[in-house]
Image (cartoon, rainbow, N blue to C red; front, side):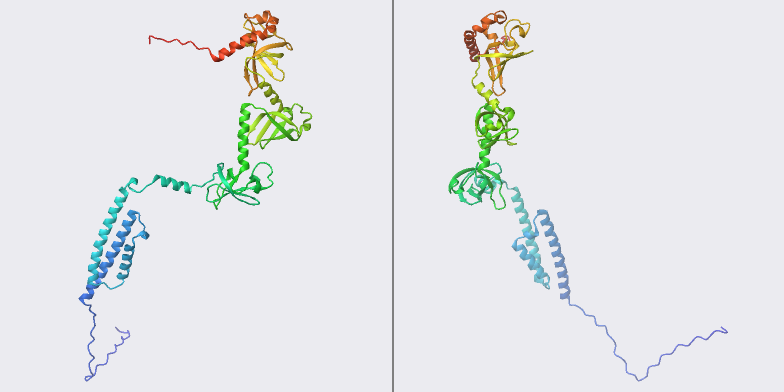
Length: 431
């Protein structure tokens, strides 16, 4: 085109000289592996894949059987180690044949293991060697000796300044502190507990890390004392105690190693209760509570209890009418009171209780009910009558002849005890 710049010409390469020597042809050298090497590589890859497959199969079988890989047999561990070491080497045709034989052998071992596991699962307990006596003996040997609250027997084996050691049949001896060796003050432990002495103790603390238990003679004696006191209270017994102290509320005493308390209201002379110190008095039980360690006694109740010990059913007793209630008379019987119920006054018809007795009037009556634990005395005057209502029409005669009539009434009461009345039963023979 007109006016455009001419394009630059390309440089022409120099022409080779006519007589210049030619360069040799460049040949690409390709390294060819021999056929034997290729076969070895293929076989090694195949063996590696087979080993990985066998490893995965082994892990799956072990997982299904619940067997840890750490618990393999020594032969299997050795074979796995050999296989891992051999896998690093270049396999040969002999190795290939051996690997095939090993895989077949491994399959046989796995089949044999499966069969053994199945046989073990199918076996029962009776097929194993089992001795029940040996099993129980092993349990007794391993069973800890000394449970809290248990009574144990043993012999003293050592005496120290702070306590004694007693062999009670455990892995370690029991230790009894000095303040638990008994009730009261013990001046010499060696004299009180010589070596070889047979003692009965109560376990107060179970085994520690060393297998030693803490024992106590004092706790056992206190337990026996509470049991004894409970039995005496149920029987309504009267005990003699020595007063050893006092306070504003009453006096204190000791009985069978237990601390007892007598309130001022339960003393015969409650105004001068401090004068009772060092004296011995009769008491009865008001409250016995081992859990709270509470023992409350009463001198007044002891007087009633001793009075009850002098009474018996069928006995003729003299007293005085205290009060008149809608349900009967309360009679003073020299320290205790008895109840003459309105149904036991007379066999006749009575319009009012005051028609028979008045407060302060003397009376003779038979004891027909006696309950020392509840402090109840039941009286009866109707048994002293001849004809029904005689007590209303001729009370003086009944009271004068009360002693003679009481003998006859007592015989009838004893006969009723021996031969209680039988209830008539209608028997339908037709059925």
